[in-house]
Image (cartoon, rainbow, N blue to C red; front, side):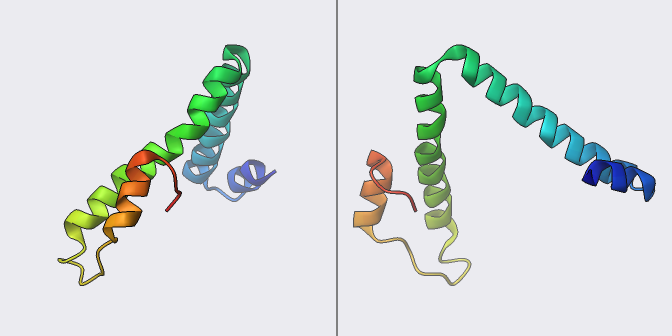
Length: 85
């Protein structure tokens, strides 16, 4: 519905961006469904890896941004995949 309204309003780029996101989600879910529960588990656990890398990047730039560093205990938990940031 939103894609249709964007097209009617003359916002082809916005409509294409929404369509592409919808298409990518469809392809990803179809792949996970066909690949089975092991792949679904791995897909869900990838979030922890992503959060750890984000936290590392945050740590590297926290001083430049005048932000507080993440404590060592939280970083260790993130590295082990035991906590979501």
